[in-house]
Image 1 (cartoon, rainbow, N blue to C red):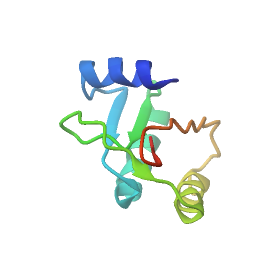
Image 2: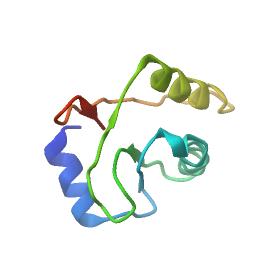
Image 3: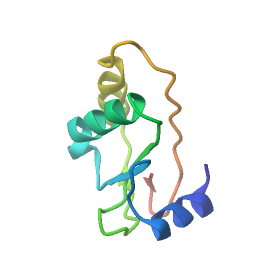
Length: 94
């Protein structure tokens, strides 16, 4: 996935297969959504996009990555989840 594909998803909006979270401050909700998607047909949770579809990104520190890994690690059974980091400007990422 690249920024161009993200922009197309944003234009389409949130759906059963795509959900936007503004930041990892919503990581627990993102994990719940991901779990639901894994129990259904799959999908994508994009962090760094407002529910209104504005791409804002966020600074990604080691603690951010640990939080994401911990959330994914709580899923039972373990699932093959692909994490992509997409660089934006000013050190922010999706």
